[in-house]
Length: 272
Ligand code: KIV
Image (tube, rainbow, N blue to C red; front, side):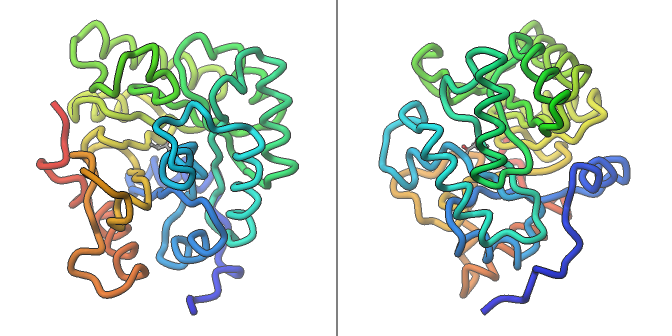
């Protein structure tokens, strides 16, 4: 059994904004069910992400594209039952925010039926009006930039983004535009470490990185990758924290410590 987290002070968007101001890093992991939510929270993870990566790690799909809104509501509800103090962020799945109206309706369902406290959307400046309206409706938003896994078929594969200066500048400008209209957090995936540092410096909102170098304000990993559960080759930017630890709890605590101290990600996990 784990420590009772139901009395820990809840983590909110305000907590995370303050942590950024104080240059205090925070740890994020994906969770898909109540048991994992309890485990991750007890080990000190500040934000639980119900990622649409559940398409791959739970459902055995090849991409996140087949994941539906009903799937996300179901898993968010499970995680919410084990989550008492961490902030609960949920992915809006593929094509569930194609129009502003759809985005508001579906985000509301994730919050009302699932218990999400923040929604995450993949995209850049085309989401400006959507993020503005979500924000006006009291819906906290995380803007996911860089590599956008829901666009894998359009991108032709999973590739590092923002390598050229023009592409790097575009990611920064789009993140600034989304911050301007109310995004509370940015999450950036698979970009050169140097761009992760520039982005975190440019934005006043916290920047969560995955494959984005050590200078982001926070780090996220897919929990099944960092516990060695995912079969096959682990992404370069991830690390198996179970190695050298004798329990899941100890492994997750080690991840939280390594993120907070800046020890993870190391140079071997960075993309160029
Ligand atoms: O779905 C997910 O797990 C994610 C992470 C890769 C950040 O979006």
